[in-house]
Length: 378
Image (cartoon, rainbow, N blue to C red):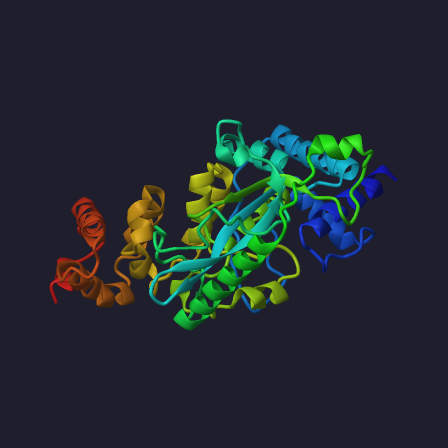
């Protein structure tokens, strides 16, 4: 009986995160999902959709204490939400689209619970502390903050495949709508939002249709919406799923299509997840992501990945790909395409290419048989 009750609680939590197509609490499928979500020792669940195959790595080891603590945090957060009606007390905004000229735009909200964020990440503990301006409590349903930029041209990951491509015309239309919304909002008579104390004074023990939900609204400017939404979900499920690498040549889907294909947590790019996990100091997720990247390397895409700006930024990723080249460097496909990539570096097409080329030379010096000299001078 207790087990069934616990499953009902977690079923409601997952439904509150937007999992509208989950099986009923009595379903044996849900029992399996809950067992997986509470232990990193379980292998990550494979995608239920054959349309977007993804290879799931073996998860890093975790102690039972860590898993139990994670479960306790989720239970506590949910119980508090039952009492005050405010399970979501943080809204994280992230840009979702990128124009052909490189402008990143269309911020979208990801609703989260501060206790869960702080438990998993020292980054969020600092961000939500009193020493940061994001500590300010506001109405989390008020929409995107007017004092934050709705677009930027200073996004430091220009190859982020988790950003959806849109045309310049769509971007201009979006800016026009933002201006109209701001003017409309500014014409309204300002009303002070209720505070926690005033709500308590009025005896509002649970929210009504007129109750303002109080919390913190934060813009995360360096992470794509799709990535952020997936990571916030992973913090509960602890079973990351990733999309195929863009270099794999497999079909890419729009955000709306992904939401239709996947009834549960929507997967994201393993490279985008690795980058965000590094930022958020989520070592377990970073390990998942790099192992998934490794599992997707082939003779057809290894050099494209190896010569990417992403690989030149992260030594751990470069090491994994160097190991692949050490073992597969004599592949005919690699030998045929390597001179083309070296030519791009010599002609200045890859600003970061010199760093990668040094790794190639170092690899060859350590083991001349890996990459025959003749193949690089043809």
